[in-house]
Image (cartoon, rainbow, N blue to C red; front, side, top):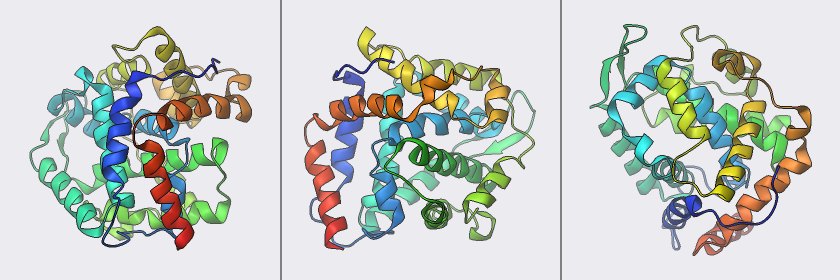
Length: 290
C-alpha cells in the first residue's frame, strides 16, 4: 500500500465542491446543526472510502442501476459525478435550511424524468420510487457507519445508532416515508439483507470497473485509488462481495493503521487544495461554539 504524499488532480473537483457547499456566514444551522452526530461523522477524513463502498452496494440493486446507466453519462467524468453527489450531501449536512431543502427539491425534480424498464429484470423503474430511494440511502448510511467505525475518529454503538436515526431526515426529504427508514444500525442491517432483488448486473459490473479504475488518472493517483478500492471491497458485507465475485483482500491490507495512513495521504492532498482548510475550520469553529 503506497503512503507517499501526493496531490491527485482527481481531488480538485471534490475540493471546489467542498468549499462551495460549506457557507461562510450561514443564516441558520440547517437541518442538523453543529451538535449533531451527522456533522461530526461527515467531517471524518475517511468519508471518501465510505463513498466508494457505498457505490458498490448501491449498484447491486438493478433498478436504480438501470436508471443511472440509461439516464446519466457519468462514465465520461466519474470524479465530476462524485463531486456533484458530494455537493448534495454537504449541502444537506452543512448548508442553511433553505439551501438544503432547495437541493432536495432539485433532486426530486430531476427524479421525475428518470424512469424506464430494466433490461435485465424486465421491471419498470422510477427514480421517484421510495423503495429505490431507500436502497440508495441505506447503502450510503451503512457504508459511512462501517468505514467510520473501522478507520475514522471513532463511532461507538450508541453514536452509530444516533447517526442512523438522524440520517432518517436525509431520506425523508426526498420522499421516503419515515416509518420505513431504518432508525438504528440493527434495522439497517436487516433491511439491506431483506431486499431479494439484488444482483450484479452487467451495468453494475461496468460501473464498478470504472469506479475501481477511473479513466484519466496519472500513475501515482491510480495506485492510491486502487488501494482505496481494495479497502472498500474488503469492508463489504460478504453477501455483497460474493455477488460481484470478488475475493476478499488479504487481512493485512485492511489493518487499521496502514489504511489510516492511506487515508491520511489522500486527506493531506485534499486539504492542501485552495479553500479546503478554511472550510474545515468553519465547520470546526461552529461545532466548538455549539
